[in-house]
Image (tube, rainbow, N blue to C red):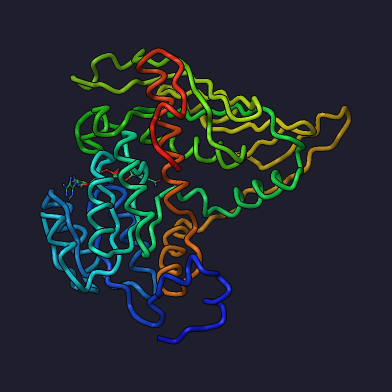
Length: 367
Ligand SMILES: NC(=O)c1ccc[n+]([C@@H]2O[C@H](COP(=O)([O-])OP(=O)(O)OC[C@H]3O[C@@H](n4cnc5c(N)ncnc54)[C@H](O)[C@@H]3O)[C@@H](O)[C@H]2O)c1
């Protein structure tokens, strides 16, 4: 293997990890449903990737994925453990329902694989804790599917906030509303309405928005309280145990507050969009998810576009995973970001479901 100068510049932490320069990365996909099949298309675009194995318990999805990846003639499996037995598989994508992520990712790490694990990395503190321990003990790459971290608009905006463009961050107001619930006919996310499998809407979906909030605030929350419930889709679909709306307050260090709402009945025709993150600083307020514009507090001050909206590469995160394997570049994000994002969502969900203030320290996960 050719070791170049760049390799040494990454320092001791990465020096421990030998990267697979100039060879193909044998890749396996576990879970080829909606997200897994989207990821598979991205994998096939990577110059170093070869799809060796596909796994799903639904034969129709497995067949469809095998057709998509026909170029590489992958083997198909119903049992994910058989995939991990293959010595020629270097990297594993996990895009199964959330409650399976931690167990599958830990087994993949123990089998010596690089792992790209969809978000949330776990739906309980215990699942997150176990995966953190496994990933920290691995010399291989671990990337959680928090792909907003690889979007250039957010990278630029957060960097400018960190440089003081809006002053000190004091408060955040954010929402993730959806114009509809996921289909109730079982065609998509048949696990989604079971809180023990998905973690609920906050954990399964808002984990992206909450991660952006943590990133721009530059911290993880200290505690959370709030209310949630099922207001529109009562027992619909039957047996539903996830909420359809909620309203939360998170407190961060230095008294920074974040107010977050979620629902699945936000009319698409309503103005101002269904998702936003407004970041209020001591000098300006920033529309982080929208135009990337900062609005000065000072009367008569002119708005400044901190980071303009742009066409983002939807596979940038996945490409960075392969770069990390083949070139030794730092992964776009690692286990800590994945764990903080999942735990922030779990914290909020516990506060809503237990109807009490929950402290980060109550979660019992050392990061
Ligand atoms: N990063 C993102 O933006 C994003 C977007 C959508 C979904 N996701 C995440 O991707 C994951 C999957 O979501 P989805 O929408 O694709 O769900 P899905 O139900 O369409 O796909 C999940 C697949 O996993 C398979 N599966 C279930 N148990 C399995 C097992 N034991 N072994 C092998 N396969 C198994 C199912 O048969 C199904 O095909 C979730 O964690 C979700 O949060 C991430």
